[in-house]
Length: 374
Image 1: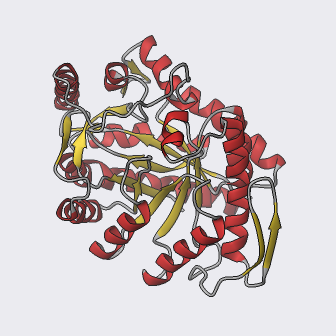
Image 2 (image 1 turned 30 degrees about the vertical axis):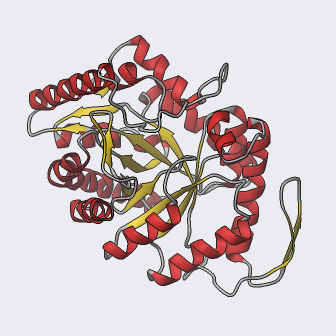
Image 3 (image 1 turned 90 degrees about the vertical axis):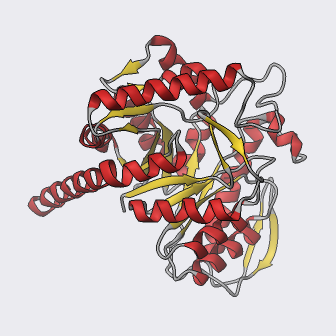
């Protein structure tokens, strides 16, 4: 099922608006969650780092504050047993009527951040652990019989659970990462593979490779998600002016020492390379500021490798059309987050999401016609 996702933070702050307020601001969480629901989002991502508030607790707050909005809880395998995570997910799913809970697996692209929680494994070890975690998690969610498992990273005997998802397969397993190890794991085990906002050519090539891996593993139903930071306004000229303002704000805050990383944590250990996905965005940003007519890398170049920072710029219709050009590559989910957090969500609800939903409906109808004629 195609979904439009946003992202929830536990406090105000972005590249253009340095962090303010407590690390957990209940009022902000409620306001931001309800804004996403009112704007027409299906689900929101809840991020993860070694210093961030607990994602399951934040998910519970978001679910309680809204009526239909779903959550995508980012999770790093290695700190909690998959059998325990399965029960936590299934409990949330039962409490909220089913279908509102999903989990996003991030193996850990930073040795420095892993070490803060006591994990000193290598990246290849982390990906092997993620593969084993996802396999055991899925079996724990699905099985109504006692479960035994003995592997490199996990061992359980007679594992049983009294709680399961409302519907079989009702908790999608997401995955992110673009190294060779990551592709092997995500291609084999994920329901949805998350990609950063790269050019159409890059995404087409990447999804083709991942699909080959998935097919070899028997994962024929793998879907893709694209993460981007749209800048939308009533006219194209106004949208580019807004993008320029965001860049000026980000540059000014950076020069003033303001940050959306208030603890000043190192992103990487000395000598450690940044994540492959972040490096790919930086390469595109160095080539030029704008690709594919309206895919903008201004913030990417200014702020360096720190997650998804590219975004399409234009009117709501122009941005919706640009996003839907990825549909033919298997991208059916769109994760969008902003720079002016609340303002962007409200603008998207008015200018972008209705256009994007209409385009998705047209794509789905065309696909059904093809199937009906087959």
